[in-house]
Image 1 (tube, helix red, strand yellow):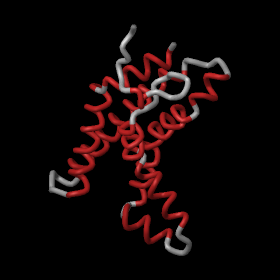
Image 2 (cartoon, one colour):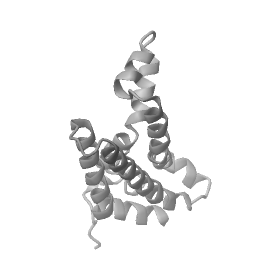
Image 3 (cartoon, one colour):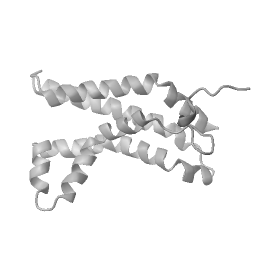
Length: 155
C-alpha cells in the first residue's frame, strides 16, 4: 500500500493535489494593488481619495498593477485547472511556477528600487512589503506541497 505524501485534506474529490492556502494568500499579497484598485472602484465617489492614499504617485499604481499581473494570471490558471484539464491542455501547469516566480522577482526589484530612491530611509510599508515578498519567494522555492502539486498536475 502506497502512503500519501500529503494529508488527505490536501486532495480534491478526484485525487489531485489542491493548492495550499498559502499559495492563495501569496497570490493575493502579490496582487494587492489589484485588490486596492477593485476596492476603490466599488466605493462610489471616493475612488480618487482611496487611490491617492495608497498610491500618492500615480505612476506607482500603474507599475504595481503591471507587477501584480503575473500573480493574477497564475491564480486564474490554478483556479480554472479543471476546465483546462477537460480540454486536454497540460502545458499551463509550467506557467504557474514561472508566473509566480516572475511576480516575486519583479516586485522585489521594484521594492528595492523604491528603497534606493528613498535613500534608504525607513518606511514601514516598504519594509513590510520587502519582508513579505521575500518570505513568499522562500516559500515558493521550498514548499513541498507546491512541488507535489505541480508534479501531480503534470500527470
